[in-house]
Length: 226
Image (spheres, one colour):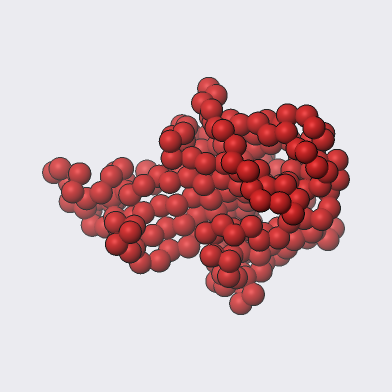
């Protein structure tokens, strides 16, 4: 199986000056399946208008967790990165962790370097203004909603990513929603109240630094609609 996605869970509203707990989840479609390696995971809390501050992740049962104490009112952004490393794909479609030279006796047809990114907004006693781009390698920027409509901007290295396929999965909902970003990198979904994960990914040829044939970058935005 290919490496899982990551996403962030935290209360939507938290009080000023009180510790807020968040979880760094690893799995598929809101179902936890294993635990991310703490030595490959990083998490930050970005205060309104400020620089992201890295948080200490700790192992917590079947997940990783961290705390932050908000010092100002406004909308914080939690930002996560995870490096699953290089994976090898065999001729029969299996995904094996590690480069091709480490797969003795296997016929490897290609190698992939994965990079995972995740974001979640947290409201500290007020829910505006929402932050814009925060300079991640790949990012979904949620724009303030209008009714049930939620507009997003997908960026790669700070630039709008057109033609990006975006999937939206709702907790406790059958099926999902799907769309493709326009030339401006934007896309609009009708999302009713509830917990949602929005997924996007980008593929590009691997570089010498990647050490693989292909670079696959994925991003997940966790969004609570009320």
